[in-house]
Length: 506
Image 1 (tube, rainbow, N blue to C red):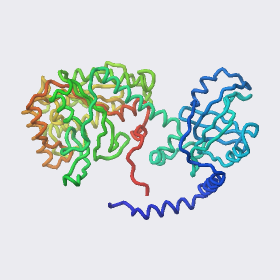
Image 2 (image 1 turned 120 degrees about the horizontal axis):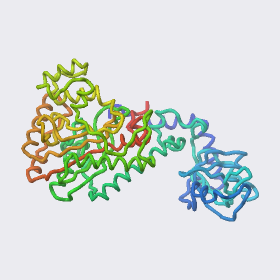
Image 3 (image 1 turned 135 degrees about the vertical axis):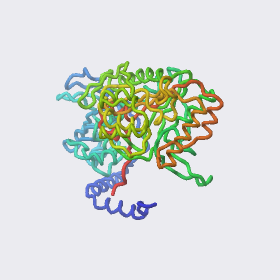
């Protein structure tokens, strides 16, 4: 429990802060006044008959100063109160509608209720639709119902919620105040729905695999560790679903499976990294990494259209075209073109490390040949890949789950897709040879025992599954959060995760 305050301290601090907030005290007084009027400020329900955007569209041709006899029920949050409550701007999740509260239509009791309203309150209104002389679509209130009394004021209207820390920590305030945030997170939902639909249309079966693992496998990463009390055993939060999904291909559940899943990696936080993140992983029997590349191009094009309406997307200062096909370049080829160093002609880890140091690429000093190639690529090339690029034929040393390249045993049939210097997909011709997989896991175990905490563990059961026969299989993982970043012009992964991981408030 280190770093956690005792519960009673938290309660005392909350009470002290609440008591010191004069705005809250004023609203509590209004809440008491509502109770004296016999009004429940937190009722059980309300039945809106129309949303703001729907009304704006339906009555787009209603002329100024024209009235209707159409009664509607609308609900939302009060964002503006003018003329002592005569005019209220009510916002729902589709837009704004103006409410007119006047003694001509409301009883004295209802007018008293209006006087006890504050910005931020949730309100239900029943009334007739008209357009004012000034051209504002309006509901003339015949009845109002408070749906939730807000005890805390919203941030100042005209500047919105600007503090980044508050935006992420109190995402509900960010959503209330910033339409851009709502648009980004709704776009995320549209992207995920589009990807899921596209996979199902292609005959993939959606499945769910465990989030608690006895071994942290399927990727090179440090895991989160938890403990199961009843079984008295440590478990790991999933770092990847890969090995479980391929077991399903072995078992013949389907020839093509996918999962949109939460993964957890015990790593640092950055604009591109959050310890909890979303991936879509998919596996297809009788396919290889070339098939996965074509699938990725199709999926990304459809996702771009879902998010923006087209395939050309603005990200920062760049216009990025997501329509395929994308250029395919090997990692060693890209390194050679950028640095002049052809690592395919450099034999052995020692010579590779010397070449990397000559290029001023930082190393720890004991990296195998393939890890050196990866380090040079990350340091000198990765950030230059602005437009979608399929980086192919990654080294065997860094790809323990991929088939050896059919033309060069130092490489694998694996690719990563980079956009604006961000990796958004990783795909393999999956390793299906159980004897080779045994040797790869053993090599990873050697690295683990040598101090590499991200090396993969030896998964005996997975090797056993391969010994029953995994058909030729193509597999791919797509980083949903990073893809959404690119398609919504978001600078940080925190902008596209609804509740990103945060350090506790001090």
